[in-house]
Length: 392
Image 1 (cartoon, rainbow, N blue to C red):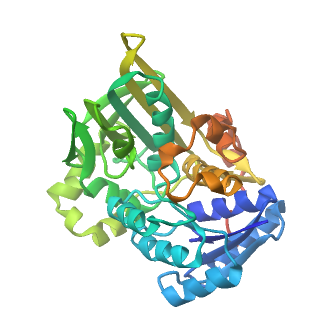
Image 2 (image 1 turned 30 degrees about the vertical axis):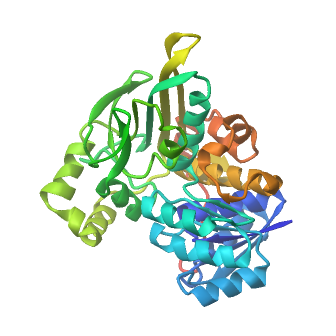
Image 3 (image 1 turned 45 degrees about the horizontal axis):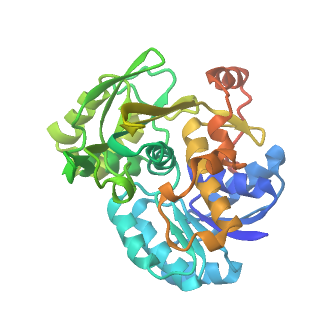
C-alpha cells in the first residue's frame, strides 16, 4: 500500500482522498488546519459505504515542523497539496527533505517556478500544476502537438460553468475563490508571433461555439502551465483562455479594473462568496485546437470534451471536482506505478493522454454521463453528503 498524505479537506481534497482510498491501493491520511474538517470528510466517506480507510488529521501545514513530523510519522510515499497556492513552496520543501513524491493543483506561476528549483536533482517526482487547467488540458494539447511535423498555432480553452446560469455573472463558485481571483488578476503567459510574452488578464476576448452553444473566452493566468517551455519553440502562437457564458468578462472587468478590486482581493473574495452561489450542477468544457503541417498540408486537430457531474461512492460530485481530482489522481497513480520514469521536476505534458484516459482515475473524463444525472439526483434529494458535521 502506498501511503499518501492529502493536505486540504476542501472541495477537491475530499474527493482526492476518497478516490485514492476506494481504489484499495492507497493508505490515505487527509489533513486540514481547521479542527475536525478532515474528520467530517472521513465520516461522510464511511457513511456512504466507502469504508473507514481515510485517516483524519488536524494539521496546519504552514507550520513546517508539524508538517515534517507528519510526513515522517506517516512514512509518506507521496504528498498532495490541495491547499491555496501560496502554501505550496513550503510543502514542496518538506517533501524534498522527507524524500517523498510531491503533487499540487496550483495555477500560480511563481509557485510552480519555486517547485522547479526545489525539485532539481531530486530522486522523487515533483509534479505541480496537476488537475484540469493547468494539468489535463496540457496533456491533451501535447498529444495533438505530437501528431504534427511542425506546429503553427495552439489554443487551449477550458471552462467550469453552471449548467443553469441565472445571475448577472452567469457563473457559480465551483472551486477555490482565491484561485479564481488569481487567474483573473495576474499576467498571462502566451506565445505571440513566435515570442513568449506576458499579456493582460481579461483581455483577448473572443467568441467560441461548441455543440451549437455560444461562449466567450479570454486570457487568464496559469492555464498554459509549462507547455510553452516544452513546445513553444517555433510556434507562431500559443495561448490559454478561460471559457465563460457571454457577458461574464465585462462584469469581471468592472469589478477588478473599474472598481480596482484587483488591488483589494480580500474584499473581492468576500463579495463573490457572499453573492455568487455554489453548485453541484456544473459542466466542464475542455477544448484544445492545434494547427500545423501534416504530410505537407496545413491541417487542424481538436480535442473537445464536456464532463458533467457524476456519482462516485454513492454521492454526487461536481464536474470540476471530478476533473480536478481525477486528473491529479491519475498522474499520481502513474508516477507511483512507474517511479523510475518520473524523477525531479515533472511537466504535465510528459504524461501520455492515452495512459491518463485509460487510468482508473482518469477514466472519469470519458465517463459519458450527461447533465440528466445531476438533475435527477438533485430533484430526488439524494445527492449524499461530502462531509458530516456534528451540528448538521
